[in-house]
Image 1 (cartoon, helix red, strand yellow):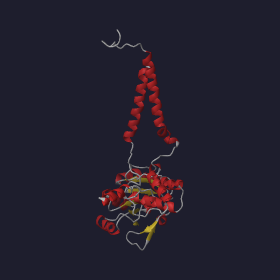
Image 2 (cartoon, rainbow over the protein chains, first blue to last red):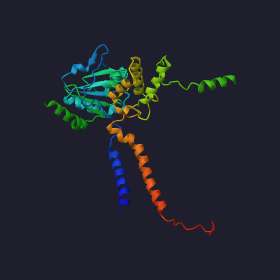
Image 3 (cartoon, rainbow over the protein chains, first blue to last red):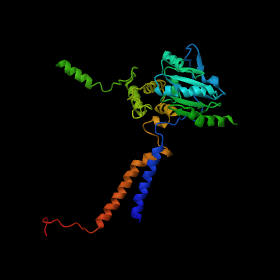
Image 4 (cartoon, each protein chain N blue to C red):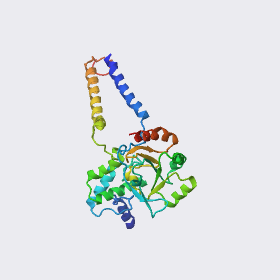
Length: 175
Length: 143
């Protein structure tokens, strides 16, 4: 009996590993910032290089930080969802324009609409590195106390906003 | 002919060139060697199977710049690797740290060899105790 039990047991362990691996998301890397305070940045504004924007200005308020660029194809796909989230007005949407060309970025917003309260221009990608950004689009939810509540990598949708972001925001708002 | 030989020698002996960086190399060869070693320890998170030394996507070049600046600021290797893992998590390291949740990973090669060895030993010792039931080869050996 034992003769069969051992190989069957080993096989079951192997199947277990493979089964878990089947449903694991190996593309999305977890952000080490979840539950920690968001890095502070100060950058020139996309629309006006002579003025700067810092996320310190948002202290005490939750906000959404969306990393985007005109070279990023999927950013175009999520643009409609961002416009809708901005229209609902539950949180301000801040743009982090990453390693991009200023004129092209401004044209993009002109053509597709501008969901951002303000877009910060990260032309050297320094702030992106600070936030652990590895591929646009990425969307961070920062709570009123300045902690990162959630990070979503790849295309944002209204469904994801409602199901994964909004509950966190409501939970964080309760004392 | 001479020029061909010279050109070939030049190509053969340019092995240490860091071709994808536009920034100048460190003047100190020890620092340059350290820079190249650290760049190979760090994963390009955009391309996953390449280190930031091998990749020329924008993110890898940004991370190399960050690495050069941290070195120029006099940070130790440990401080530099911590700077990267604080932002990107352990996945940025090609060699994951030894921690409780990676014990299985680090122990896996030893466990697999041990398990296979034990299984082989058991099978061989059992089989060797069985009487030899092979049919005698006709026509070979003394009969």
